Amino acid sequence: MIEGNTQNIATTIRGKYQILKSIAENPGKELKIGYESPSGYGILRISFVKDNLASYPHLKIINERTGEIANILWGMDGIYPSIKFVDSKGKTITKNGYELEFPLKLKNLPSTNSTLSARDWLLIGLKVFAVALAIWLGLSISKLVISALSFLAFNALVIGLLIVSLSVVIPLVKWILDVMGITFDDVISIFEQTIDLIVSTLLSIVDYLTNYFKK
Image (tube, rainbow, N blue to C red):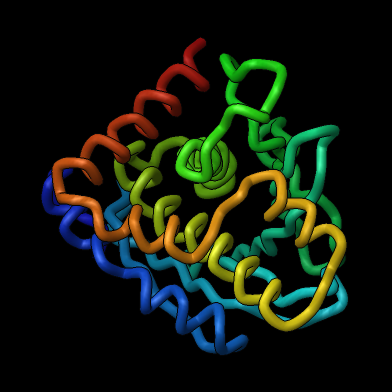
């Protein structure tokens, strides 16, 4: 359950790597994540599915309260990997005037990605994913809760990509991993940080969300 103060939430999400790896390795296996919302508690159901939307098992998120479904696919936007939320027919979801497809690029990111470390890419991805998730779930949800949900979901997305790369060569997957340089150890390390460092990561996502949606 994602609830409480920043310290409580950081403690809840820390060390969840093996749980996320398990759902990525077992398409159809589901993880339920409860969270606080203004209208009571909500539940997100996340799993990996094999279907005709992608050539690899992809992340699927269900908002149990509303029944809405988002399939999360990887893509490319110039020199940047991208993520997009699509419906069951593969059409990019549009919500509240936003089309939910975003390159892994922050507003203040330099024009080249050659100097970014694997950790940099993970942190960028967490922030970009949080923007998409905030729009999809609704901007009334606490930014801290969105940050924690994104921490789990985006890292699951990356774990899924790494698992695919072990068994089959898919050009898009290979290109994304070559660009980002992320390994299993990089993802493990972000979950094994101290509570204080996870708190710092969550707060940096909150800050990005605040600035992104600033009028």
